[in-house]
Length: 421
Ligand code: NAD
Image 1 (cartoon, helix red, strand yellow):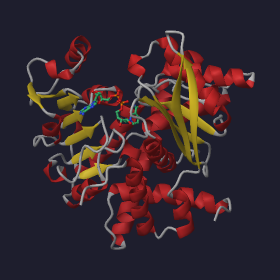
Image 2 (image 1 turned 180 degrees about the vertical axis):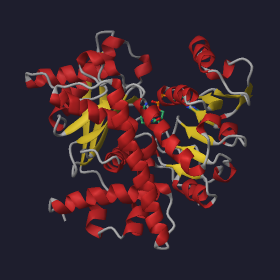
Image 3 (image 1 turned 120 degrees about the horizontal axis):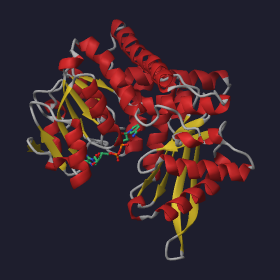
């Protein structure tokens, strides 16, 4: 049978697995299998040739049982409602696992941002906010940047929403530039959170981080900061890749040289003094301790999960491991830390930004990192405690299912307390 790769069906399957393990009430389960609200909008945007072009945008509020929706906005030519729904579901579990006072949401526009100039991007971004304006707000649903959206785009969106409401509404959106009250530490928060998880997992597996050998798939926002931070911790990144392929050096790769190579040639594959490898080979390297998928979904599947040699997989990307691969890794005792724990640093610092906007009092970068460490380290411990508790009761579950059990039970309890079932 073909492996299921539809992201929303995968999200539902993961929920179903957790629901069965935890005996979730069937009414709560039915509510949680579908988003609360799905909005599809038409966005007219002014193009450089003077014409107005129509774009399709989405905003999905998956759950607001524990607080306002929270989740990024993606600009992508292949954006689809199914992907946005899956990502909105994952945001719900991510915010719940981190125990921050949000539900989950996601948005997107079908467009090709790489072909647009700044004026066109501004026009489409402001148009999106006018179209979804009545569905978002600091107490309703709080967007943020995601694939191909930037702090500048967040600033335009905040400005448009503020104009619609006749007052500054900094708390309507996070991931803003510092000039308009973004948060210190937001730019590398996803990777920073991932590094705190790596530190905790390494303790458990008795891996000495200072001697750890790491392979990272993807050298974008998440992957490049993870590379830099891991190197600062003393670890050796021996392999890296991007959409053109990868490079490997047993002695370790140099971050500065790699960044320059990428800037000059547009890819990491032209890095001198390292061996060229494919993305598939990177995943299967046999002399690494930690594998960090930081690029795309569905990279570790039933077809290659039995060839993963790392002791620890840190899912910095969203959805890089399919449910079948998750099971294979678990049976092979590879510790696979799930995406909605590992990459939750971004949304946790987004939460700090929103909290600071509401207080009008701003924290230092050190305070931000310390608070992030506290929250994500607690999520890690909660996940392993839950896994242990189930194992003691004779049910062996993966860290992903354990994290789901925690996240889903918190959302279900909130729904119960509110009288939704
Ligand atoms: P990005 O666009 O900045 O970088 C993506 C990287 O993946 C690029 O280096 C690209 O070349 C590479 N890539 C593309 N196709 C590839 C392929 N076939 N094989 C190998 N590499 C390939 O994106 P990002 O923001 O770094 O996000 C990466 C992943 O992390 C996504 O799954 C995203 O949802 C997730 N994530 C990112 C953040 C964040 O704060 N940036 C937060 C949470 C989750």
